[in-house]
Each structure stands twice: as structure tokens, then as C-alpha cells.
Image (cartoon, rainbow, N blue to C red):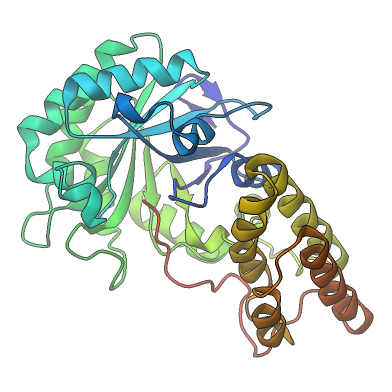
Length: 345
């Protein structure tokens, strides 16, 4: 796929998710089939540039290009400076957050709250595009502020006029948070209103759903969020289905054991041992969610305090499963993609 000047492997995108889409996770998703992965949201507050969290989020060492960094804020000048700051540190695409519904973001009129103030949104979009004229700028937003104010088509036109090169749209309003079903008809209206690429986001949990959303919305690509947590191979499954019409068989236990192991080892290296062990817990829980015998495993695993204990527990769990099953096996019949509703920022 040609996307804002870059040739991507496909039209499958990893949604930016706070506390999830760090460098180890982005690299893993790209390795397992994603065409592009957008970073966690980075603050536009220059006072926080030196914080450990902000520096980690801006760490792209060894990351496969193109590197897309999402910035958030409510002040045009600060957002412009944030764009320049991140481009200087390796960002090749700047993405503006106008989709996060979290109160701590919306209370300062950032994230999806900007959809309520089209004038301010326009000023931010214009300022960021002008600040990095040689870098593509993209936008992530929702369908509107609430169901009575679905202004995504109008904002999309404003964004295109400002020079925004592509739009990702979560199919819910800010007021909806993550409840109810994603609406793809509004995304289709946005696609009809502009000429730039549109990426559909929300509730895409299976290869079949990805195909249906592409057909219903007319979007140029799909963005996957929570369905990739603990299942980063969903991207290769979707890629295969879209190109062949066939479903890949469930992955081998031995392969996912290795994927999980390498992922948490990368987390240890990226965050340091103490934080790495804590952060690895949620990823291990996602990898094993619903698998035979996983409930007791997850409870005991969360009590472990050291790398050695954590890795030994992971090895024991997967080796025992491999003795009985070649492929991942779940407690109840289900599609392994069913990780719940996507909660992308």
C-alpha cells in the first residue's frame, strides 16, 4: 500500500494505545504482519520532554520504518513544537490525536474534545502541518462529539484543506467511549467527502470482520487495537484472508511460546528489570487469556517478582500445553480473535 509517501507491506495499521503500543509491541506487530504501527500518545508539553516516560515513548532505536508518532495537546504552538521535536528524534510521520475519549485528556480540550471546537482543531492542524512541511501529518479522530453531533465529515474536509495526508476514524463518538457497536456508515460518509486515505477503526477482531468493514466503509485500510493485545499475529491472519479468502490455521503452541518469550525479554530490556517484570504481566495475561488451564496460571503468575520466576512460569505453561495440543486451544469454542471490543486511543 502507498501511504503518505511510504510503501507499506499492506493496509493494516496498529492503533496507538497508551501503555500498550511501546516500541517492543510495535516492532512485534510489524514483524507479524502489520503495515504500520502508530506510537503511544506523546505529550505536547515541553516541560515533560525530559521525563523517563516521554523519552521512552520517543525511543525508536532499531524500529522498522516508517516511524509514526502520535502527539496530543490543545495549544497550536505547543503542538507545532511537539511535531518538530519528534521529527528531530526520528519520527517520519506525525499523527495528531483527536480521538482519545479519556477524561484526563478531554478535560484540557485535547483528544476527542477537540471535535467540539472546530476552530481550535483547525488552528492545531494548520500549525502542525506548517511546523513540519517535509513530514506527512495524519489525524486520528472519532465520528463526532456525541450522536447528535457526528461532525467527522466536516472535520475531515477541514483536515484535508489544512494538508492532513490521511485520517484514521474510530467508529464511535466521544460520548460513546467504547460502548455499543462501532458505526461504519459515518466512516463511509467521510470516505466520500475527501480524497485522502481513510483508515477504519473499531471492533475489528477477525479477518472476516476486517473484510466486511473495508467493504461497508470503503476505507483504504483498517486499524486494529485491542484485538492485537496478546494476539499480534492477527495482522498476518487478516493479510492472508484478504489476499486468499482462506483462514489460516491456529498458530502452533511452540511458535506462540517463542513469540511471548521474545516479547517479554524485549520488555525487560526496554523498561529495565523491575518495570519490565510488572509490564510483562499484562502481556502474558493477554497471550494466555482463554487458553486451557490459563486462569490458575495467570493468578499465580501475577504474584511472581523476578525475571527467572516469570520466564519459568511462561515456559512451564506453554510446554505443558504443547504436550497435549499442537495448536493454541481454548477453554470454550471461540474464535481466538475475540479479545473484546477494541479500545484504541
